[in-house]
Every structure is written in structure tokens, then in C-alpha cells.
Image 1: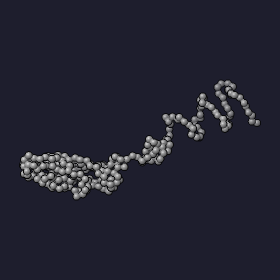
Image 2: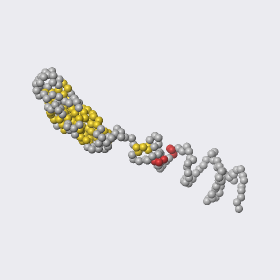
Image 3: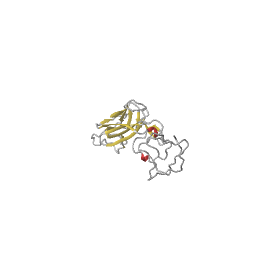
Image 4: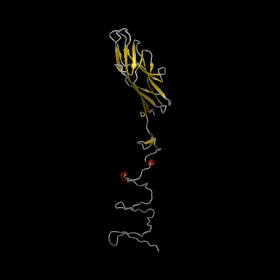
Length: 251
């Protein structure tokens, strides 16, 4: 027969341990009752029973000793290999733009000469295939060259080697023109003048294509009395010219 025990306080008969109920019993608090342990120490079991933690506050994250926090708990949106978590706690596409996606290069070291006053193709060229129509191609050219006089023309004939950058070849679209490797006007009409220099320039191109694009260097001489030679030094020795093409993420 159930009975009601009305007391204001329960103390252990001896010692400091007080046990309520027997193993297997269920101790219940009725609706509306409050168990106040704010001034006490609660020792929970090693394994807590499943329950809602919705009202747990002020939890110290440094106490997370194992396991992995699910990505859905870190922010909204879809977590994947192509998204990152931003400061506003949302997963967004990984930022692009400016990243180098691929780098190709070519070296040429065999002398090439011309007396043409129109651009002619050199063997310095490289093809690259962009991954996206929004990507750009950055081209860097370094070209050793020499010019020497072949006729006793007037002293005012200027010596220089214009260098141009073209799509496919010199019959294609001209991207850059007039990069003078050097310029010098001799003081006499003798044909013994010779000089050398380097043409070095950088050009950013937006092909708007995912098809292979070829970039080629062309040279010409400013005056037919001068021979323009690429990939050589002043003594006529072969020198290496280079072209580097880099695909830049344009997203």
C-alpha cells in the first residue's frame, strides 16, 4: 500500500551517503516539481543516457576530446570538396581568380636571321589549351638577338629589331608589336657595325576559348641594310630564347 512521507529533510543514519530507492527502481519527479542542484555537485554515470541537449549552454569546445563535428553543424549550405566555410557560417564555392592552373614553356637556341622589313616567324612558339573560356593566358617572352650592318648605307640608318607576338604565326592576329630589343644609330656609313640585346616582355591574352591556342614570336629588321638575328649573342654564338605560357583562373 502506497503511503506519503512528509518531511523537510532527509539525512543518512550514519556517515555521509544517502541512498534513495533500490537498484532497478524508478525515481520520478511529478510535473511542475523542480530539482534544484545548483549549489551541489552532480556526478553523472560514465555513459550518459540519450536525451536532448537543447538547453545545454556555455559548453566549452576545448573539452571535445574525440569524434568529428558534422559539417552540417558548422554552417548552412552544402559542404563538399569544391566549397569552403566562410565567416558568415555558410558553405560557398571556393574562391577563384588569379590562380595559375597550368604552366608550359619552350626553349630555342638555334640562330635565325632575316633582312625582311616585314615580320617573319621564328621557332619560338608554344600552344596551350585553356580549361575554361573565362581563363586568361599570360605569356612571357625572353629573346636574345643581334643586328649587324650588311651595306655601307647612310649613317642615319637606325639599327633595331622589332619583336612581335602573334596568334599561330605572323599571318595571324598580332597581339603585341614594336618591342624594340635595342636601337642605335651609327655615326658613319661603314658596314662594320654590330650590336646585340634582349627583348623581354609579358602579355596577358583572353582567348575566350577551350581550344588549343598557339603563340609565336616574329621578328623583322627596321632597315634592309641590317640583318636581324635571333637566338645569338654579339659574337654570333647561339643563345637560348624562351617562352612561358601560363593559364590564369579567370573565375
